[in-house]
Length: 253
Image (cartoon, rainbow, N blue to C red; front, top):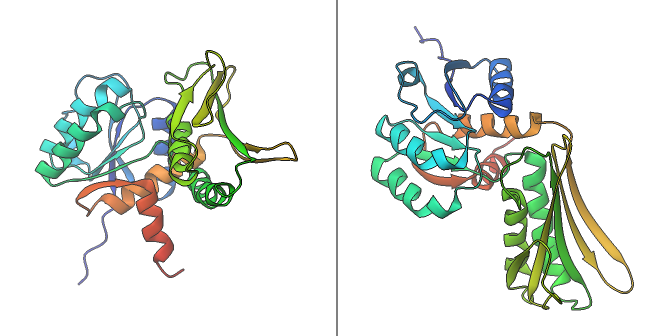
């Protein structure tokens, strides 16, 4: 007799706005919440967490490496939606590889944003041929967001730097004097309750073309994180959300 399939058990590391939205999506998909850990908790080692199959991390940047170390020792795969920890990326990758767990990270788990990355790779390759066009990135978020520019804006900048050869470095914020041709300006706005707007402008004397992603709520981010949790549970290594989507896009519908 076949054993019933056990629902995926998720530990929410960070139980703020995003953690609660992940919880809602996970429960809607028939999963269980094994643990709920406060957003600024210094430790994640709890008896409840040991029951979890996967941990989803939406907390604060300063806790990421410490939490990954604890979770890796417990052999828990991890989805990291927290941003602002890239300076610790090499150390975190070493932990993931030495403990033999899977970790998926992204500056943005929205499916729409990750499709935007694909569009920008194509657009960047096309505009690379036309020096008449300059390019800039602008992002807006709510007034409580901690990091600026956003991780998503920096990921967009990476896409553009890799496809438009005349752009070789990021200029964050306002310039001191004239912007050099090789600089890609990335600017930020922080006000109100804006969930997230990312705008890329390709501008010339003749015309202007914009590619914009506007998040209406946190549902898209939470859904992507839950999809990543389902995918990473049996994986080993460090992956991006683009790796997850690339694998899912290959699967028959």
